[in-house]
Amino acid sequence: MWVRLRDAVSKLSAKLHDMEAIFRDSIISNLRDICELIPRLNFTGDADLEYFAAKVISDLGTLDPEDLRKREVDRSRRPGRRIQSFKIWLRIVQFWGEHGH
Image (tube, rainbow, N blue to C red; front, side):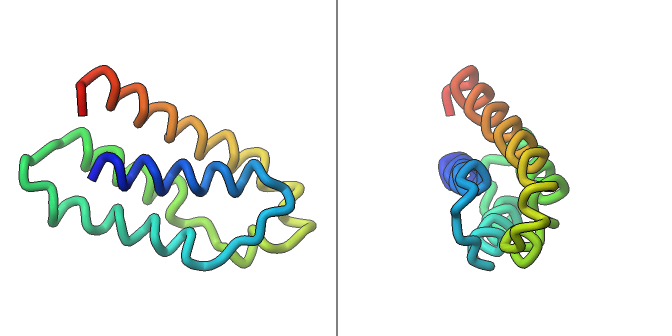
């Protein structure tokens, strides 16, 4: 589950960095789906995994793909969302590396 969460956040972060990217609704819905699956599939009871899933939902799961598609909104919101998604991705990668997940 760590890999799926990391990869979903990484994909969103990459899209947010590409100012020409096309945002499909699925990029956010897939992220939400993975985060919603984690509590049910976390058979080892990994509290850290659940923490990161909740963090992703609260910080990125509320993004509206329609807003991200609009050019005028892109310019004003994308830089902050880019930083936010990258920070979460970086924290997941660092945590994952430190704890051998």
